[in-house]
Image 1 (tube, rainbow over the protein chains, first blue to last red):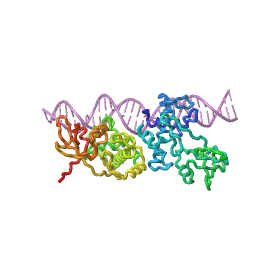
Image 2: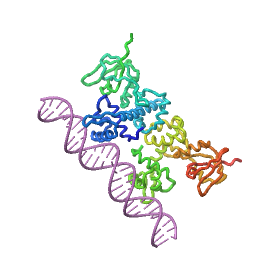
Image 3: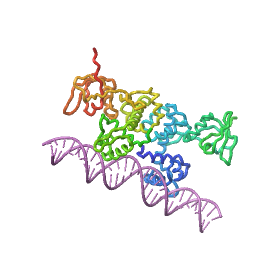
Length: 222
Length: 222
DNA sequence: TCGTAGATTTAGACGTGTCTAAATTTCTTC
DNA sequence: GAAGAAATTTAGACACGTCTAAATCTACGA
């Protein structure tokens, strides 16, 4: 849609991803994109001058309506491509992210429409992440993280972040995928580890891993 | 394979495409890439310092073995993508070039291998252009151009350059595709136009169009 | 409230790839 | 073979996106 550089698109996508309702900090953007905070500041100035973000000095940034639209379009590309790679080309869920990351900036509107149609206008990608619609709306999804669950909670895995291929492979090895039911058996508050039971085995996860897994509380069976 | 910028890849591809056995001129590269000759000179210096091309000042450039390998890999990507878009996503032959031009620099080795396998290790793209093998060899193809044919020659269309979408649409409208047989009915040496007959209709082509169409002399039927 | 740690911005530099204008070399033609 | 035309290169500038080092601002604890 817009004629923005790939770099600008990446910044907007990162800001959208980091958005938790308030301002997004320079440091967080720098960490997400693996560039220095100084680089972020200079790009922030450019994006703000283009009215894609709002910037209050020293206070972080917020996407404008226009900026969010661009970000949603990139995210739509990314997730549609991930699903297409999985469905049509046999990629596994740990392989799709890296490929989509490269392709998302380089497909045409036409390509987007064609794969969306072939996939039947899907709402979720292989990791359970919602695919924004063409007009930028996100299908509903869960926001509770496994790292916040209590011992003895019984949970259904609904989403796993796509950016840690190692974690995705580990989950597959243990037979954990979308819709898998797990039970929290232990929380180690000092180390942050969380241990879950799935079928006959237990899996011990780092806090950073558990924070990438989104779950739904098992409906109570009457 | 190599960690070259997209721009460098484009230069190498252009040089490979313009290669007619001898040196390729600065001006021709500039025209192909739509940049100024001065820009080409500065990029030539960089590519030469990387041993991807040989450069004799004021005398043009030649690809080295390493440079040709990179170029062939990009061309392989381009043509595989074109065929995949046509076969799997329903693109017509006038639509594939623009999309492939963007994607060719951004697919992984893995992606290349997967679509090549799905397509059955094809040798030719939708325009009849040969797809380089992984080790950089080009399947055989015809090199005679329609613009060089004589009146009354009966010819089979075997290749059409992919970079003129308008021409490709015109050919489709007149029912001309790969394997179509045509007969030269007139050559206008002053204007350069060439007129051909296909089935019941005649088509008048500019020299630049006829030079993009490659033909095979009809085998003599005994 | 004061000082400082941490976050942010500024200053200044660099590499890439582009441009125009000017200088230089090669080619063509008489 | 010399002069002019055409191609090529050099010189110098600029936008983008990055960096490090230094300056500045914010927030928090004593």
